[in-house]
Length: 247
Image 1 (cartoon, helix red, strand yellow):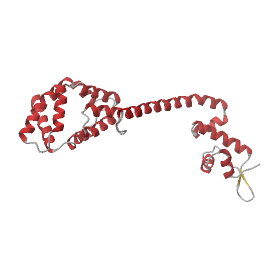
Image 2: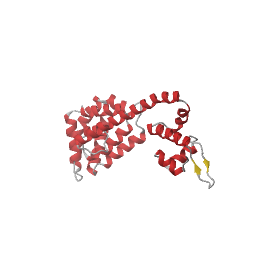
Image 3: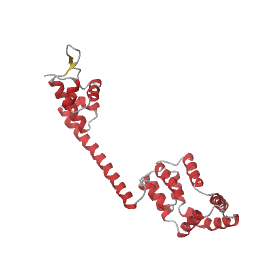
Image 4: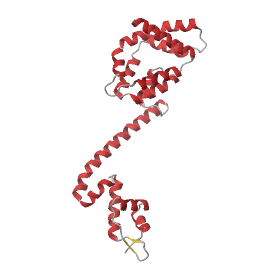
């Protein structure tokens, strides 16, 4: 009994491309040819193709299939490595399912990772904080973003009030209004920075993944881009007040 390439593919339940690829990587020997030039696969080709398909279907890479075909002992030894890999994939899927369930429970957008969501909420949950939280959570190790979230959540009520006032400042606010708002916001910000100075320094200069100057500049740009002219002016005055208190 002999089969063509198409017939062998149909019998083994694989594509013609797979058969050709197995030839290319040396797993499946080239068959003889009929008088008309067409390939002629034998029962041995069929059995070998079924073995290759079985191993590939279990998840073994083709680069290791050849040695497994030559040695049953090699095949048995490879099973534990495959089991460990499958366990890792299952753990990743369980973690992913947990993230999805949490997003569904909270009713939030899936573009926010758990870390980004935590940072977003800790920064007040206003629209301008969204991109900042996303960038921070991507650039910082998980343990560092957790430290930052804890620090923000630990901020005094006065800091949250000041942050809300900054976010609500209208773009047409007058200079005296902006200056007064800056004066009110400076003290709680100053107190927060003093209390959490070590944490903030550790986060910025983390040995695991320090935030580069480019990333810090990008974050500063995101902060300012999310502000109206009055809020940007307010930020300038707060920075000036903080610099003056340090001097």
